[in-house]
Image (cartoon, rainbow, N blue to C red):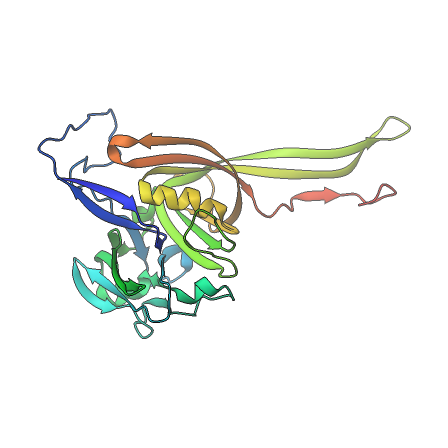
Length: 314
């Protein structure tokens, strides 16, 4: 069988549902470097999440948000946590495994938001209660009275260590505004989103920008000098749904923070606020159903500057 992933338009962000296509033979290519060990047949790439019960700082404890959409007050919903395909807990207002949002909790005055619901899973709480392992979030709900079901990708939960986190980056975004291509209107929601992926934040480059004037005695005099830093965010081989989430949601966020976990990195980056400059390159690995990207980023806070005030103004 060939497992095919596709994106639903009624959930956010990891709207991956499984469709299975019958196949009597599969051609498996043999490239020089395979980014995935489970090539072609029944390939499901788990998303690694981590937590540390002994050091509960955000850097070492991951979270994942799930947002769903219904349409009217009579619709019903239920979210559940599964471990190794066995239901272990209902994700409701008393679950204590993160933050629960029912109808109306996410509304900022926009009528359609009255019927959003979701959960932000705190993997530390899951680890303490249920231990390490493979987890999925499943939801069953109705839209205009018709049943809908959702099953997330598999999240592999493990204890945080520098060795386990090596080779990854964590992206945190806060989403407001209306993305026209999305089924969700985030206006006023300040919706929190987080994902850990294989990649790196590196190649910090500093540009010197100067503004001067020439005096009557031919002396160059400073008005303002500043330093502008740029970075390369490398996203290494993610499945199509994750790539879509990053490119069409994360990069459009109002706030964007990056933490790097590569032990060989020459700089330590922890939740630094960045702004997107451009998508430098994208590579589609079509026979793996995946993509890689390079994103050029710059400091969101532009305050490395020195000014001299005089008759020319500020």
